[in-house]
Image (tube, rainbow, N blue to C red):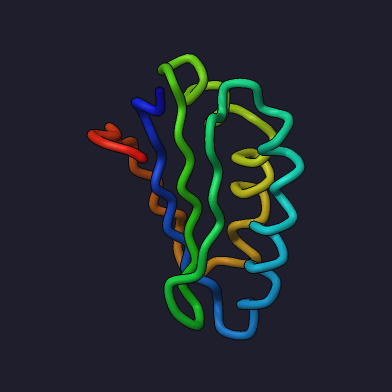
Length: 97
């Protein structure tokens, strides 16, 4: 059961939109390696705004993801790619299909 989630919002710097898209879509293999990550989505909201939504069955899985390779790479590349710091929100999944 997907009980917990993360909602991450990313705003690309002007001219870095394709780089942000490539970065988040390129993270899929890393997400697939994470046993505690149940689902993982990368998406675009508008021309410069992107996001990642993931779900976890428990807090251990969510914390492992937050301390994992994707989060580390995101924080290392944020100054070059993003207009501001990533917005990372912990959420509770109330219903899912």
